[in-house]
Image (spheres, rainbow, N blue to C red):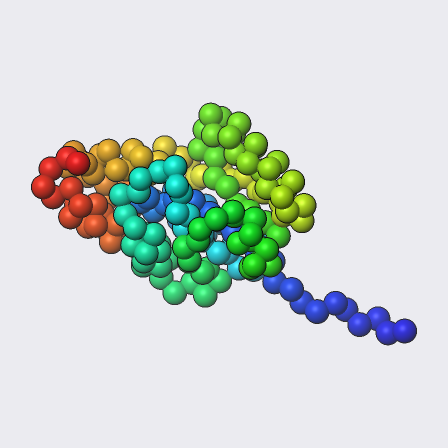
Length: 171
């Protein structure tokens, strides 16, 4: 009998959301999640319960532009159950951001359901950094819709896309 160690399997985390638009708050959670995962897959959801401002392909491109050349982060769109994507990727962890106590109840229920559907999948809740905790996609869209300055809230590519989307006035 040999004491051969098991083969190395990178720890894969999935950070899923609609990211409509991707904010500095999202980027903060994404980058800090690399501290406990070898690879982070940012999964852009096609949420059937939301009418997104940008297509999934546009959101993927914004995120890719925002992260630059970080080789440990992959960005992709997905449909269907998040647990199925996690299985496909060999992920063992879901990363979820919690900005406020009001986020917790829904996220807690989803974590329990996901664990039921995929027992080997853990959910890790992260709070944003102090300087990004107030940023939400819906608030960014609202400020942009009425011509407010969102430069400190999103990557310049996202700010330009929002300005173009609302150029003819509030939608």
